[in-house]
Length: 89
Image (cartoon, rainbow, N blue to C red):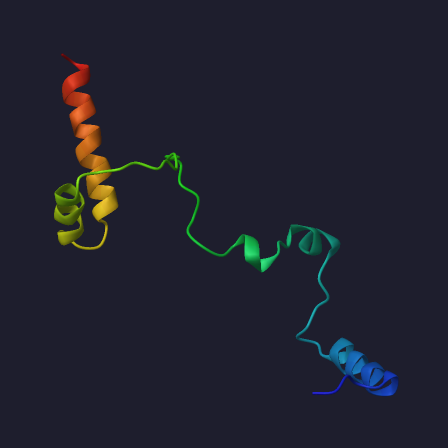
């Protein structure tokens, strides 16, 4: 697709401005816009987790993986339960 000529661009702009259903964005609306890439991906969690490198026994990892998708969250929950049980002692 080629870029429009100056004359074509003027005609396109004039047609857009004459459309009663299209209103130009206000400065406030323009200022509130954010790049699309900032909206992509998983929403930020209130419960921030740390990224660490840990080595587990193969049978532990195999068990949690066998429970299906979300196995890392279940492993985290099991460890949190362990902490709670042993913190009270």
